Image (cartoon, rainbow, N blue to C red; front, side):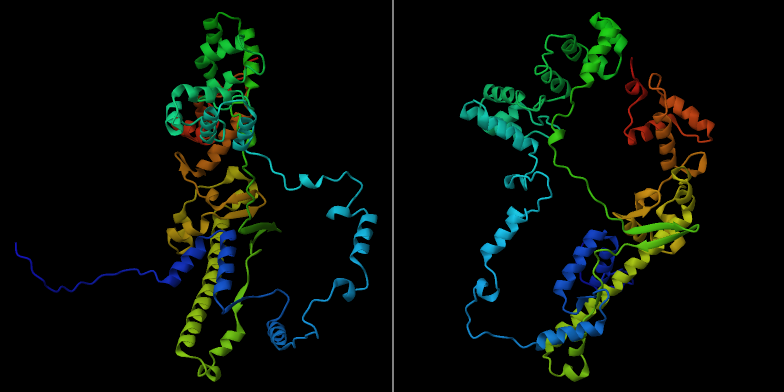
Length: 481
């Protein structure tokens, strides 16, 4: 087959994302904090943008800036700085004496309570790695064992469990397996008890030694009946160990007091403070939507740079300066327009959610209706991708609490087109919360109760919802007395 060159004419449609359109899409999906950081960066880079100060008219800002430029510079006869005692009629020693007499020494006010020592300020709680490393440095061991122990500590997860095998640890530290085992035994003696275990069973067994519970019924249950213990089959456990059920229950009460995650008390996870993007409040039976603009700089075009592009000053600029200013002005105008479009879109999406989920806002989660992105997109004549960008990583504050926008979108369950899966999960959660702990509800029982409420869902669907709610099975929820 011979190769040849030829010309062809084809018609086609393409969607080209210009930089301005990409910026508009990016602003639409940014959460509040990232939006504030993005606008602050634009303020620094674009001279045409300036922040509007609330309560100060535009004319007064221009006058103040002009006056600041024309303000004469006052110079002293001597360039050397005057001593503080010559400029003001007091001595620095008198100042510190007055502070001490008022009980305000060392930089903090004395309100009658015992003040903290200065070295206690700025202290932080050590994490698990720092806590174990501190104990390792105080322990008596060889240099080689200490090296391996530090590698082991580095491979512990947040719960205090060892993630890697001893063979891999020994290979990384370039030591034999016996040295790695000696280092691991050393870490097992550290605080918190149970740290360095490979699984839950070993973690609980390591905690028995500090409590003097070795060679007891508790240790026997953990070593010989851990499978029955894990599945809460206490009668089978009593029969297997040839003990009375009462003794088994007493030992299990002790096991329940052990810590399955010894490292969690040293985690540095802090509470994440969420700032809502939208506030919804009810007044006289009507809902009011307010966009949260706290911390968001209010942008406007700078009059000073706009005057440079007027016909009077245009001829004084070089072609490069003129091109630079025109590009920055177009970028500033598009940014302000995109920001305004973002606010309008978020407001309209919130308005549409209120239209579909009005009963939820008035009566609670039991009245949450099934709703998809397509429903809102059809209502607003927008594309689903636009609705998805608006609702991602954004939160709404209403009388029902602080909710993610994605919370309002859920599918309907089979049999009832007006019941959402979120509402069914809440019903399951309430039923399990009010159940008899001695005879908890099984998934089959939950299916029957929901069927009595005209909600027909399969057994596997109930199990899936229960697992999503992180609720144990009825056998694991059973309480023995």
